[in-house]
Image (cartoon, rainbow, N blue to C red; front, top):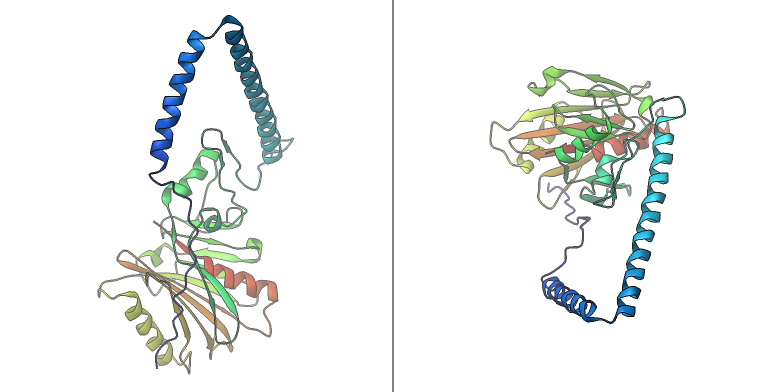
Length: 303
C-alpha cells in the first residue's frame, strides 16, 4: 500500500536585493560628489545653513542613542531584577545590525525562521513540523548573554542537546521529567533523552548511524516494518515527507498504549535522529497532548 505523501512546504525567506542596486549605489556616490562640490563653491550664507543642518542631524543622533541607552537600561533591569536575580531569557540589542538576540522563553526554531511544513492527517487533524535546521552559530549567540544549555533539562522553554545535535521546545517545561543517557549517542536502542509526564505520556529521542547507506524513505519503511512486527500497529501509518526527503512525520494508533503515537525521523549527514511520542486520549490532559505533539513536531537538528 502506498504511503500518502504531502509535498507542499512553506519556507520563510528574507528579501535579497537584486543587481539593480548597483547602479543606484553608483548614482548615489556620484550625487554625493556633486553636492560636495556645490558646497565647496557655495556662498558663505549657504555654507552656514549646511553646517546648521549637520548640527541638527548630530543632535538628533545623540537623542536617538540616548533613548536607546535608556531602553537598554530598562531591559537590563527587567532581566536582572532589582536584587540581581537571574531573568528567564536573553535580550540584547545589536546597534550595528539593528536586531535583537534570541529569547530562551520562545521557540528557538521560530526565532531562527526554520523551514516548516503543514499537513492534514486522514483524521482531519492538522500538524506543522519543522523541516529545516538550526545552526551552531545561532545556538552560540546565547553564549554572549551568559545563557547555558544542558542536555538533561530545559533552559527557559528550550532544551538544547549539543552533543546529540538537536533542540526541542515545550510550552510547559516544568511538566516534564527529563532524563539524559549519554550511551544513546552510540546505541540506537537506548534513548538519548526521555521526556516523561506523570501519567506515562512521553517522548523518546534516539539516534542511529546510517551504516547501510539507506535514504530516508528506506529507513521509514524499515521502521514501519518493525512496528508491524512488534504488533504496535495493525494498519499503515500516515506519513508525510519534506520536499528534500530529509524529514518524515508519522502518526498512527498505538495498539500497545491504546493511544495516539507520533514519530519524526530526520536524516542528517550519516545518521538518523528519531523522536517518538505517545499519549492516551482518555487520561492525558489536553494541554499535555498539545505540548507533546508540539515537541515531536518541532524537534530540530543543530548543524
